[in-house]
Amino acid sequence: MGYCEATVVVSYPPAWYALWVAVAVFGVGTWYLRHFTQRVQTTRTLALLGTASMLTLLVWTWTQF
Figure 1 (cartoon, rainbow, N blue to C red):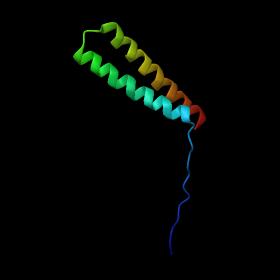
Figure 2: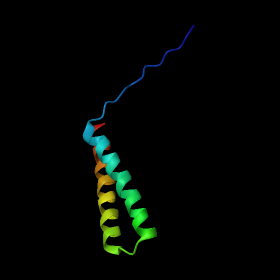
Figure 3: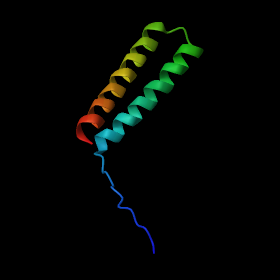
Figure 4: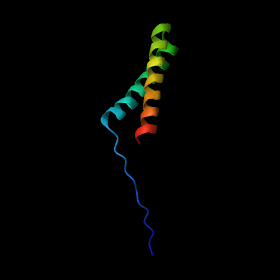
């Protein structure tokens, strides 16, 4: 009759979601600084922090989930 497939629900810790927020904030901040200011060093710093956050999130996701 009916077919029911099992669903796996993964629960991520709050710090994992905080990293997503950090990636988003650093990404928007980098874009804003690049297009609307002349602050090159601050732009590079935010870009580096965003890249580090994304790599941390990627490695954490691959190893834990």
